[in-house]
Image 1: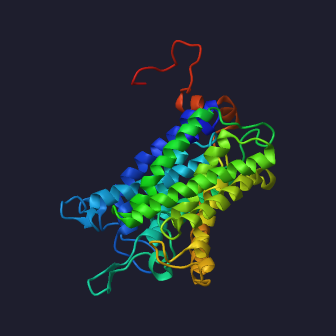
Image 2: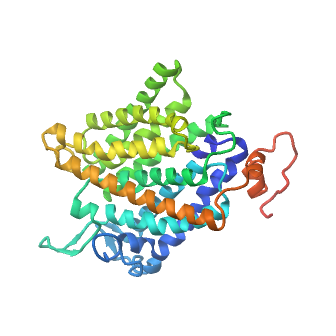
Image 3: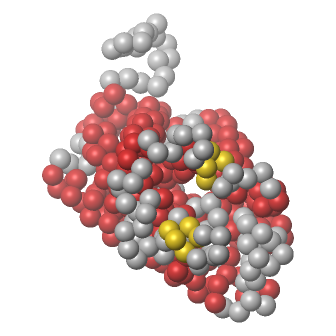
Length: 407
């Protein structure tokens, strides 16, 4: 809904379909081998899990299979949603111009080569016996580096944001970019989508506690206040810069705040959460306009929002973390020195570099073989009609060229 409202009317269905098909594809791939690559037995160096260990998730559905205190099946499907949203986020950078078949191929390859390994680095913690000895090694960022990323600032948002930049560079600019405005066609949809995201993010962040406990409560609180501060920060920047506080600015500020607090929500107190949200949102408000000066076409500002806010949220843990929060570690501003800050920078930089390089190579390979971009004529006509033979709005007619439940 958020992405659908952001694009022009002639690209709404395609934008939504890119997310829908991502959900279907990732659900299947995650079940087959994605969960295993993410949380399976480490194959060495904390880089990736054994893709065959839980093939088909057949070993996670028994009643006595638990992850902590919850059924492993619940944990598996919860983590599946992270994989789905990460690749779906990327689609916003190439709105209006990507071949649907090429996108399908990209999704399968990208989650396999990029998301699953990175999620293993970040989310797979060492398994230990009662004596505290490591019996099941996990990912290198979570364990060897011991950087903090509670709910996906690196694995989801930096990962998706930098991948979006790589795709935007390979596909190039939309027809008319920089010469004509590409305004959201339906701001009501955008606002409703932002509201649903804000509400749903509580489960995204607090659910990562994998329990109904004090950690989940602090995370819930920090998610609310960081996002509120971020929305107000974006509106203030708009008011000073343009003289108006807009609904699009409010929605964008909400997303910036949610992204920024995602990695930090267990490591900071409410004041730190508000600071991270406000700073990240102001930075994003400035960053989204830079694409015109730099010259890349990130259609829905995935780079300006998810990459920038993800970096700030992840790195600023090293500044604003406090031992009073559930993560129980102090950042630089709380007397903890620079050690945590360095860890956060290394983790963020590693994910950024790996994701950009591999994504660029995947996109380039697809573009040079089957082609990744529709023709200029098709883009001008509208990707909905050309690719899906449908239009999102049939105003003034008694029916579309297709109707009912079957084509």
